[in-house]
Image 1 (cartoon, rainbow, N blue to C red):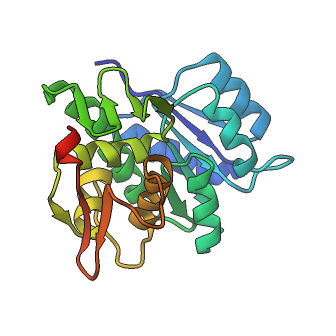
Image 2: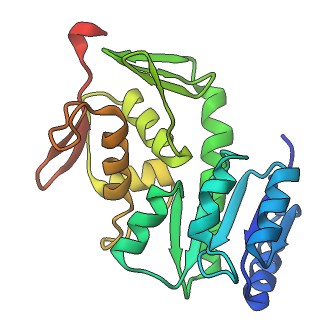
Image 3: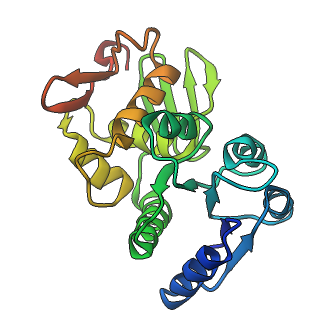
Length: 235
C-alpha cells in the first residue's frame, strides 16, 4: 500500500511545524502544508490526498468557505482544526462536509491517533468485506463503488457519514450506544460531551429517511443509543 498523503492547512506556522514534526516521527513522510485558502485549493486541484486537516480561521477565506470547494475535487476525509467550539460551529462544519472536528488547543498525539484510526479503518476493512451490496427496501449501498441510492436516486454522503451507514448496514437490528458507535466507527476513545455521533446520525437521517423527524431506519432507543432497523419484508 502506498504511503498516505496528508495536507495540513493552517496560517499558524507553529502549528504546522508541530504537526508535521509529530506526524513525521509517527511515520507519515508525505505531508504537505498550506497557510492560505488559495494555496490549499491549488494543492487539492493538483494532488490526491488521503486526509486533510483544515483550519477554520484562515486569512481572506475561511475553512468553512473553502470546504465545499475542496469537496468538489476530493472525497478525502476533512478534519476541521479550530478554536471555535460551539455546537453551532460544529454543526456547521459537519454540514459542510467535514468528517471530524478538533478544537484548539488540542493534544497533537490525539490528532495523530484519530488520523491513524481513520486511515486504518478505511484501508483495512474494505479488503476484508466479502459482501459488496446491501439492500434494505429502497435503500441500496454498493461498497465497491461507494454509491448509495434511495428509491433509485443517488445520494451523496460525506465520508464519515457513509462509514456510519455502512457500519449500520453490517450490524442490522443491533443496539449501539453513542460511545460504542464512536469507538467502532471513528476509532477513538469517546468523550462524554462529544456530540459527533449525534450530528452524524442527524445528517444520515436527512439523507436516507423520508421524514428525518420520524426515522424508520435509524431509530433512537431512549437512554440507550441507536439501532438500524432494515425493511426485512422488502429486502
